[in-house]
Length: 150
Image (cartoon, rainbow, N blue to C red; front, side, top):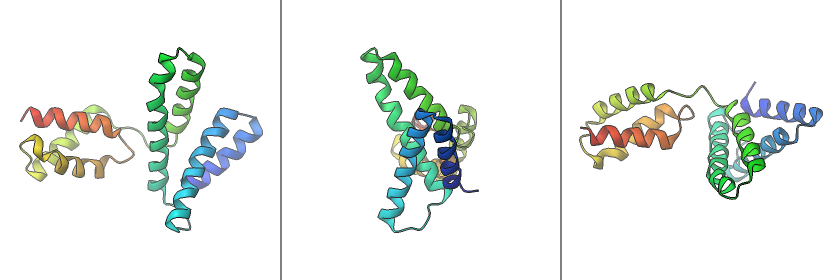
């Protein structure tokens, strides 16, 4: 079963259970997937592209969390955190920092990076391997730290 089909089945289940938060977030992801399919004139997105849409939604929610906290809206913070948890269930298991560091070390060796100017090369090699399995912000921080320590 593809990830898109799983989202559709989970949407039906959320509607039957009257779980409005889950229904709402799945509808947002499905709308994003359908929009990309329509714009790209593709019949059906592959799972990697669907994972990309889910990751973008998680990032959007994470971006507004500080605003909710500043406004002292704990209800919105709780709802946003629930949405993030629901979406993370669709992502593959996330890599630990140690695993990311190992991947970054290999990428540095492979690209021959020696300064911060080589960060783009290293990030290109690392993101291909960590796509959907790690937050790019975390990966970027690790790459910076490791290149600065060379």
